[in-house]
Length: 441
Image 1 (tube, one colour):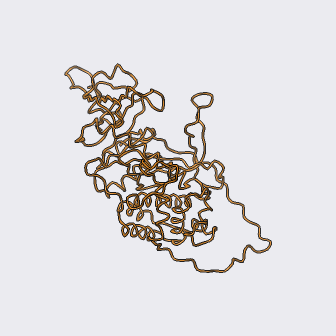
Image 2: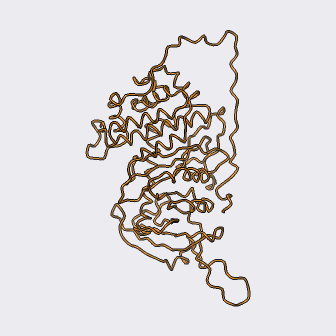
Image 3: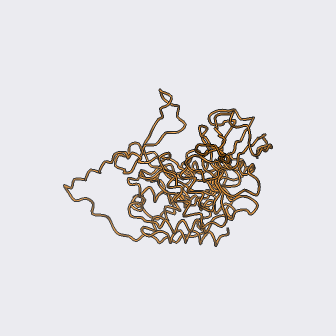
């Protein structure tokens, strides 16, 4: 990445906007430079935002972006992956809470994470809002340096798994190499596994501990009766069924902690006996064995036989936590959840703006020296927020394709006696499908 490439990246993004392109691009530069902003209107205080504060909201009311073209541009300027390491993608969904936005349509009920369960213990705290699915390129070590390939809202008539498959189906054919996709336990779905097996990808997903898998059925003898459809059973929460793994590896992880890895080849589930699965158990003796950090974890692998070995692939799952760090950067530093935009289409556009700024910061990582605060450690790797501060001072050299605003005079305002219309209220939409209700192919 050099200066001319970064400038071309910005010009290509500007060409993606179909309406209100100048105001939207000014919003991008304002979000980069206003590193101390705590609210959405404060972005208009940036010297790079050439308009008044109310133009922020008007830009998202009138603006439009070509999502397909933006996705191609993100892939075009994707940081070159190392040929020695796996090309790893992560896909996950995050909540945008809007519990009191009664005039916002298509809100759904969502569980609130990291909150103690109420009484009874099986109940879970709920909130309402929108949910977004993000496909990212994960860095070589867990950090906020993720690169967003696609970010879409999960509508009320789709599940996380359905949208994840649609996103990967669009993105994978455009990628330079066969990727390894990491999935968490929220994507445990036989339907999704079957669909992903038809794409040129490898999948490593975390499993829930209450699942059961089977070996192929043994040869049928000539006795009477129907032949067996399934072989030996592997129940993840029953140690009695885990006595004969097909392979074992012992070593250390990236932090030097001892790890033992067991795997079972050619496994299947009853709903899709034709789908070959590799079930992996990762045992970490030093783990505290808590709910958030268990000593034993289970994974499923779908795809080609890895050249580096199944044990080394299973250790790559730790990279998935980099996506959580990327979400934290977007929500805390880039104010992703702050704007109170009424319609989901307006917030979709804001989410794309946040993704653009995120990727611009990542693209400028090797070109811009980060700006550190006096108390920040100079020996550590620079963070996206530090590079964002440095990019703010470097922005005048890059220039902007946005045109300056044209004076239009003052608005006449609302005529005397006009009564404002009350905004329409929308109920919370109940999801019509769940992961376990999807029929496997």
